[in-house]
Amino acid sequence: MTKSNLIPIETIESKIYLIRGVKIMLDDDLAKLYNVPTKRLNEQVKRNIKRFPNDFMFKLTNKETSNLRSQIATSSYGGRRYVPYAFTEQGVSMLSSVLNSERAIQVNIQIMRTFTKIKKIIRGRKQLALKLKQLESKVEKHDSEIQNIFNAIYKLMSPPERSIRKIGFHAN
Image (tube, rainbow, N blue to C red; front, side):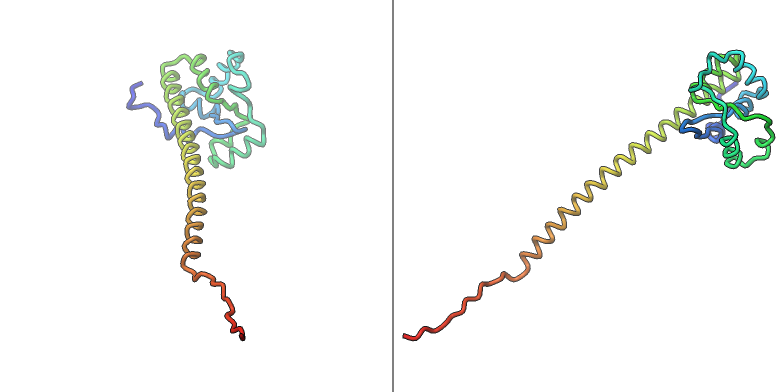
């Protein structure tokens, strides 16, 4: 598989979902990317189940599956008779050790690059948010200081209060 016919990162990105606060890929989507039947992918996983602890792979609940179907909104996804397996980034990485085809190796490399790209984007957004927060606090501080300057200018502009003395005439 040459670099020119690798799966586009955008295609892989569209197959990554956030479930339980974790970025995952579904067994069905992975099987399509690896060009193997979902049944075969899951058989290989089950034969090597020790390689897939719960933080690498888990089965979705019926509710999660239903929510995901409504997000995906494709008829091909709705035809499954069982709830799918969800693979975390580490689980996807582990798949390369149980699927030993050249395509699986190349697809895994592309998927890992996609996960890395997503992490960089998220990290960049967090850094940008932090910088904006710092800038916001500086502006607020400057606003306060500018208001103090205006108050001082207004005081200088207003006429001084003179103490008016009553001048009286004293009779001698």
